[in-house]
Length: 219
Image (cartoon, rainbow, N blue to C red; front, side, top):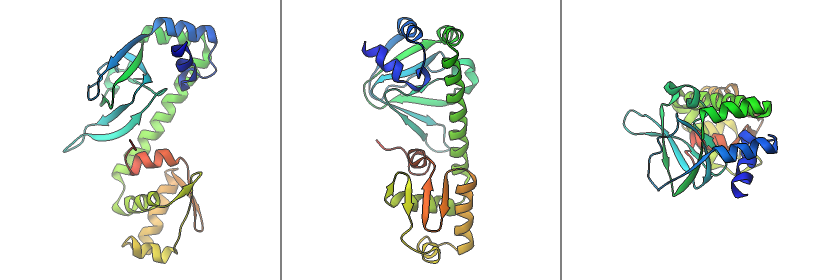
């Protein structure tokens, strides 16, 4: 019953027919990984985290770059399941973790059995592409954008809304930026869809994602 409920609550299986979820539970394989163990099954399987958490990293110039931390109910291997060349990241268990593994054949059968699952899969991929595009934009952003983002992360937020405690003139001085650079930094973050600003009120599109992109993932 625990496996059924965990599968049903996962984003990919949201609103999927109960019989299809039961079939998925019967077809999947549970596999355990110890803390620090690299998970090499992405590409062969769609992986759903049943317990624990994993770290997703990409190759960096001097050291791996932390991209995301996934927890119970999250999935990975969604893109690489149908394209091995997509597997450019490393996945490592942050603690003892149990994954449910779904083969490509099983996933294809689920797509044929319930269109809702297929639609969820497509929406998941679309969101991942958007997240990675914003992550790339963050890596290529100038120091002004990174300074501003880090400053915003240091301020208290309520429901993704931040109140700037100082004027734009004072903020530019605090960040050691020219006013034009500060306005360009805000424009960059707004145009990339990460926030909106009205006067001293800044609204983050997704506070959690903003933290992952500019502040690293929280443990």
